[in-house]
Length: 168
Image (tube, rainbow, N blue to C red):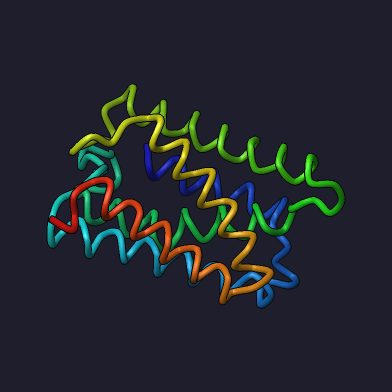
């Protein structure tokens, strides 16, 4: 399923990502890679909150799947998301973020349904929704002002570390 997600995003990005100006999006694409790697460091040193299963037909380990998400899937949805972010009213921007959260939620529901992702240590779908909303919000903030995006990331990271017991 992860292979299918990657191929689908590649095809979608060919149509809807602004590849002519990819350099504008590159810092935020690197940021999402760094944040994904940071999660993996916390997960490997303490415990996972979620973990991809290793029974994908193309990838044979959860590390390979995580690397696919880190270096391909996450940067692709980041450039697609930022390339099409609307200008205008707060409501228009809020609805756009909600659409992306909903899209990722649907993908995650499929992953759950077909046993391609597992939750641990109190992580639930409601946390995924909160995480995705905050992630898309911070991606846009990072794109517009990287320092504010990094500061918000530190706050959210500390929040998750505290709530899920990484600091104990």
